[in-house]
Image (tube, rainbow over all chains, first blue to last red; front, side, top):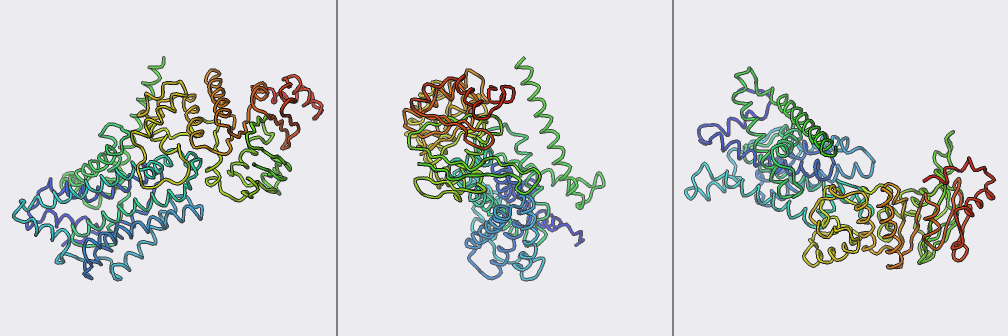
Length: 325
Length: 264
């Protein structure tokens, strides 16, 4: 195996290795859905709470590391998912507490937690940077065994992750339709309004950022099982992937204030983003691109989306001015 | 009910820019009072409301509510019994949320839990309350508030605040950012709600005739002090001219100096 320092390489081998017989479409969809759970988390902080949170670069591998360690020590796999989620929540809570009580800007608070998590994650992995899981029993191998023969093998994981993503999406939708969820939404919009309601915005931020990182860690836990390893570098650039996915989703689908539509956009955005990355990875060589260039490509993608979004805004404004005249 | 004792606020204490925004204010607000506050820019009116609401802490002095010292209580806790409306109509409501969602959040004060209280019964209640505004908003409950005018949003904020039954309401020039017609409507609504729901209110205004027309007490502020107070019978007999005369007597200023007092 050629070592490139890019964790995606192993992913490629795993997804497209002949022994699995996985198709390109399935690879994109499954990966898009797994990372889609993370995108839902990023969507909550960036779009609903208006709290740009960089903790996710650390909480994603934290979820993966916790899951890997639980698998190796034989913890019940479903309990392991819960532990990964709880670990993510705690990471988010730390960021929120740093921001709330030390009056540190939210970006810096996230970077602080993310940096500390790097060490924590290596500890969780047992002082190693990478833990392979290829021959271990995971939720995915269990699911595959259980449904083998009932559903064509190549569709089992796809169906499983469609269900998982939809269940989590629905849970998020329901949460944001409760009084608490709506108040979180109002805070991202207008913090003074929330204060005027007698609610402490610090408490709300702690809940929101915690929840978001819980989802990100959950996504990491599934990713570790799917990739067959947990790596401390898994989180590198996660925030960029998440943000790009959110923006692609928003860009392609009509604006709406219905939470169900917004979370759906986030999932679709994630799938499309992974399609773009896939083509970059496999056909990039045509323009002499290597997998190491992917982060550059992701960044450029976000810049292009920002430019497009802003020119769209400009158009809207000019249209409005014309209409008023 | 609310008592301010020896309240002072100094901005930039110990620097060259030291500014005494409030200077030893003593004020007792009784239950049912509707106090109008006038004064030129920089007189300390907004600072006074900020201290009562808790968004500012005083440099000296204390705030009491029914005998309880609330000086150190954070703003969000005081907000459970103090309602407040700002000059900016956007501060009272969330733009990207529908009218009914906004009302669900605001019709009751305090922390919101993991339950969904918006149901058909609550919608019916909102609808009937919205009719009081005579703006046809009861037909637009699913629309986002970005679609509403400043006047409509300020009227809504007022209604939602009244529904949450606060012990005291603070109005910080809440009609100043509206066009004259909407300002009139919102002011009428304010007056009606205050008398209908027997609210205790403090209202800052730049308009002297409004200050005289509404409420049972009037405070005139200048340079961080309450320089003139009038209530009951005496207030009813006030006119704009008499107020200006009083101001001259107290401050020995020429008319040119206090143009700001008369502005707007």
